[in-house]
Amino acid sequence: MKCPRCEVGRLRFVKQMTNVYKWRCSICGKFTFSPIPDEEEIERPAKVRAPKIRVPKIRKSEGRLAKVGVPKFRVPKIRVPKIKALKIREPKFKVPKVRVPKVRVLKVREPKFKAPKVREPKMKVPKIKVPKVRDLSTNTYVIFNHQNKGQKYIEALEKHGKYEQLLEDIRHKHLAFAVTDTDILGRTVRLDQFRRRGCAFFFVIPHTARPNLINDIIAPWEHTTAQFVVSQGHVEIMRLYGYEKPLHPVGWTLCPIRKFTPRPEMRHVLFAPIHPRCSRIDQDANRKTFRRLYKLAKAGDIILTVRFIKSLPESGLRQVRHPNVIYTPGRMNQGYEQIDNADVVISHQTFAWIAVARGVPTVMMANRTLKTHIELPGRGVQFVKNWDKYVDRLAYPLDILETRNTLGLLHRACTDDPEVAEWKRRMIGTPFSADRFLRALLQYL
Figure (cartoon, rainbow, N blue to C red):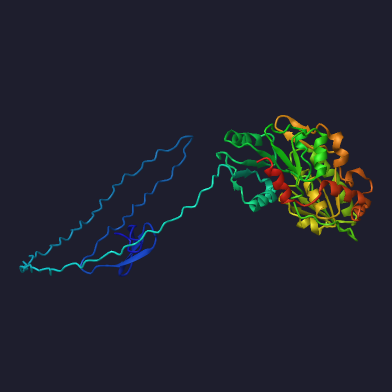
């Protein structure tokens, strides 16, 4: 019998009650009761109990066991009554014959009608003027906009209207020119693919806020046409290490330039370590600077905010718990909101240069001791070759690792220092000029 509840399991007999049978499902486990039929009763075999056998006790004789005879007994035969199955006779019945009347099919005559003649109106097809398609093979360009540092150049070309920017796809043919932020190592492979497809002019824009010193380590690509730089001060430094290709100062692009604003009280110090480049000498400079600033924070002289990229261990630092030390993650997007809110900024390269451009008191670190370098796989750290020729022009006047009076240096940074103003004039210069950029660019095209 199937279970009426789950309709899957089979019912197993449990016991007979006063007037019902008790069943249990083998799957769902629920109980079901069924009435005992009046007409027939199913006799169940009576339970037979085996007779108890008395075993006599064994007595020990002198060192020997007495023999004991086991009485023989017969197993009584149990008669099981036979149950007769009831035969059910199915009633015989005849299927009555049904007479189906014949249906006459009526013929329907379709009315004849004439379709009216519709005269189609005569329409004149308007003449469509097809605009002339300009030849994209001579007025398109590609720019490698690293960290959005080429946005000012893109906006200038959009206002000019003659050239259209394309994506960085090596399948482009006959580009008018290509713009890149570096012309060394792997980037030259992609530039050479454009050259083989018909591009003849290649221009370099700044990769960092500093002058391009990377070509003092690795020679520039031989097919580079010219390079756009920030100011005349950058031109002087690059000429000192022997850069021979054309250089065109077009102005500062990383942020709006503001006048210096002195701070009457120096309290909130923003420290931005050198971003991770897998170089131990960068991490050493970060650790030395943090130790000096932590002493001032521990003494209650400053509230120190550490702005780091990726993770602290990658910058050579570890987190120190102190109420005057705050840690905040940063992004490499040339943002300057944290810079504007600080009393003093302490950093290196681009972040520090943006702080100077924003008119915020700034102190740099390892300006003279930490030469510009890159770390190449399998070659180790490679340094610039002509550092001594231009370090005096490049170095910022205030360096935290070149003084013993750290607190006094921070207070000096909050005043209008003439050496800092002169450095800003030479290295930051003036805002970006789209006209200067386009004049310099179009003389090659």
